[in-house]
Amino acid sequence: MTGSSWLDREWGTSSLGADQEGWDWFALQLEGNRELMFCRIRRRDGSIDPMSRGVLVDADGKPTVLSSRDVTLRPLRTWRGSGNAPWPVKWRPSVPAQDIDWVIDAAFDDQLVDLAFRYWEGSVRVREADGPRLVGRGYLESTGYGGARVR
Image (cartoon, rainbow, N blue to C red; front, side):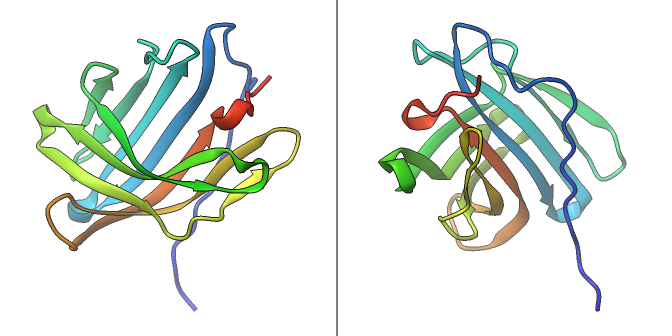
């Protein structure tokens, strides 16, 4: 049997600042042997923390750092799990300088983790924004929706 897998390792705390509500973290493996990782930190006032960052790695391994000003993430659809919080499970990311305009959709909606704190963590598919063609697969982790704030 052959296949791919994902190993998620975290170091440090999961604490947010007093003015931060949660995060949306994407790690994507794309066609053409490219990869994209981006973490958007949401503030309590609805704004995006300028410390939000990411990297796009091209097929040759060359990284391009992405700042909060470079990436737009728009939720398109939510799913309500236990606690009735609206978890975004379909997204429209845009990185105009890199000609990125996709739709990211949960492989299936119910990937909620309900442990010490509640968060959504799971498999996603990446498609062209204007068509059904699959251009990648990846992983999404979201926290801080419906009052489920990481402490």
